[in-house]
Image (cartoon, rainbow, N blue to C red):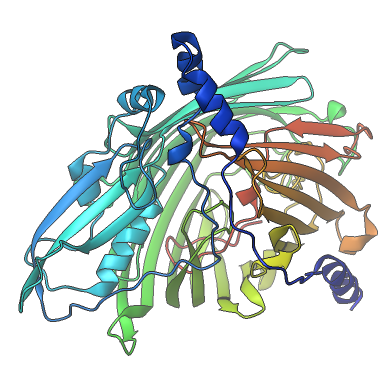
Length: 608
């Protein structure tokens, strides 16, 4: 009861949703930009500098954005598709309807640097083909899947004007590319890092990532590189190759090939992965003592993971859409430790070679609502809602030890109401050893965000997210504990700050300012988090309250050639062990407070 009461107090304090009703003003052109444009016409140098940074005033009207994206779908049921015409547009110089604006030379240079998405890459994501009967759900799902990629900004799938006859029609598929080359830069304390990400390599929709980080004090370095071949030959099979070496000289090489249940219409899914890693790390011998005194151990392992699943519809909606499915899946995982820490550092035999066998069956309902101004300004985003319920059974066979059965259950629900969006998931899983629960985990993840609220000078959206994790009868090896150092929580914390239970409450206030300042659409946000991490067999609130506070800004300026970017600053009042404050620059992004989906895929042990 103590946990429930205190949790309710925290939620009530954060869940303050102010409502003010004001009229929205019409956007105006900024005379400063007109003066700058007029001045640029006086000479070649001025004109060159102007077009290097700005866009013509006539092309840059800011349009107010609404919360909901309204799209009128006309049902052409009974007709078949004669032809499909695909057009890809460069990321610069087009509006949201993919109509050409008067662009200047810097946009033309940017478009030439960008490899436009190839027709086969777009066609491979479509759930319909020439000769198929028209199906409105397949049209929407194709748009959603394309929007979900990192290389497509907007999608329009519509009948070709004048093509509709009594029995058939032609379809036009228009995609507006996103600018695919993303440089990154961040620093935290003495660590400085940067990298590059290409989301549309050679226009094929493949991803290439490279990053580098160095510690200027210790001179340690880390590297990361990956290549993802997405949707190979239109099969929705993705292949990923990863190589990594961190500052502690740990190495990881992995290959994954997989196909998920990417839509309610998907019938089969599966995957295979092979991973080798070598780690030299410290194993805690006393919980939450100074990590400098922990013994160092070496670990090498080969991991093989195989899974397959099948999904079939349970029922159709009144409009003949498939939203409710039964999902079945099986999994085999084999982990061979080529080098392990030894019994002294691993008394619970956590790093013993094992084979894992799992099977699951579940029901899910998957639907989506198209909204704007959720995480991004004026960009359509698909918000998932629905329900899921699944059960997992199986077990683990460690080397030279008895088979331990495993059971797990998962339930989730999401809905969008007048009060806002709610999305919650609860999971419980446990091994059974000597007829008793062993290494049990109970986990709850929740998210709420409000409708867009009028708040005088701005529209605002409130986000509230919670994660509760309770562990029970964990291994004697203290590495079998949880921490607060995940990317969405307290990444500046050392991973050696450990406990058995944790609670994290996150709050974010996102502003969408109504008035542009010098035609900068400045959308600031404030974020904070409170975290508790309990030692073994203690109440989750018995530990200190850990906090972080951050601010960030989403910038959008239609007068700039590259018009969207984001910066952030995060402050931690106290870091465990060091007992000093810390800060991070540009490491946090406003979409770190994420949503639970309602797909069921690879059988998993409940995450701890």
